[in-house]
Length: 409
Image (cartoon, rainbow, N blue to C red; front, side):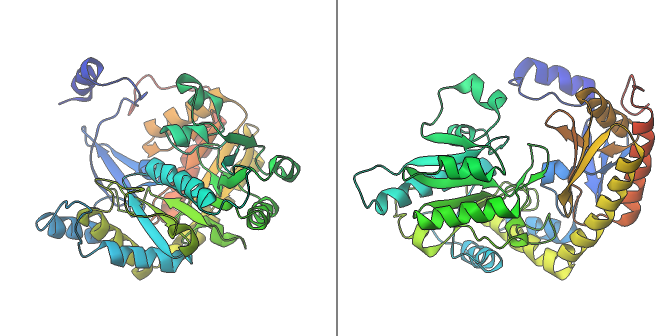
């Protein structure tokens, strides 16, 4: 079917939740995807951080073919060969102890919030309830009620209010505000190491260390959302490994299973000890296909030395973005670590136009927080591909009012 036929069908039968670009993708290889018309696009969004190895990576397609012929799903009432091995690997690379597998990132974050409440209840040492979560302004944690309740952007919360009670927002990276709002009722401080949807905003070392110190002092938990920043995107397995503070709970998802749905909660032994059989669960999380692929994804990161590449190419990419910053009046700031980068522009209109014009030139990026261009290229990206993006972006931003009538013209 053509994109117009697909759109007509979706307009009639789908719930209208996505403002899609007028482009139908049919295949992909490496860092490129191809439209129904055969046009090639360099993907610097990688499925919003999911396709970390690009498209049709031979190691991933091989494991999918092999495992799908054996066993796709078995309930968590039974064992299979991959959950324990994958949990061990995640514990080793994170420095934590225990893992729970989920279907998605938002489900992992929902579970992390439940773990914090359960831990607080199990360690209640006074008559005062310990149940409040300190979340961050400008944050984004997902679409479920608990995730929305801790999301510090009103536009996401407002249509579904009232949400989960007990959440209080702290100004991100504001030490004084954190210390003011932290009291004995707090069971957890919840934050993204790098705010993704919030415009690629890294946490400051001072703020993260203060959050760690306060939670330790009051026997509360430090919950880190690494759904977008984790598993290699910043040049380390986890973005918190660029800092000295170590979390009690970390939530991951996006690239974990090479494009298949899989999330995980990674936590300490002391937190895991309060979760008993029947307290939490999932139907699809941690199935044999997804776990087998996730193991191969982590092996590939190591065998192809992709953490080193994310560091090296990410540093080069950031330097090239800084060169645009120096030359173009529309650029306000460059932010990010590794291959999780952003170019903040001076208006939403310029940013929206830039996304459209880059797509017309065969490059996929997106904008977040209205006026921030977000770059999440796959870990296999090359400096030559970075140069291509920089050349096209420089041209687009030098003529920001140019608009295309149709994608691909």
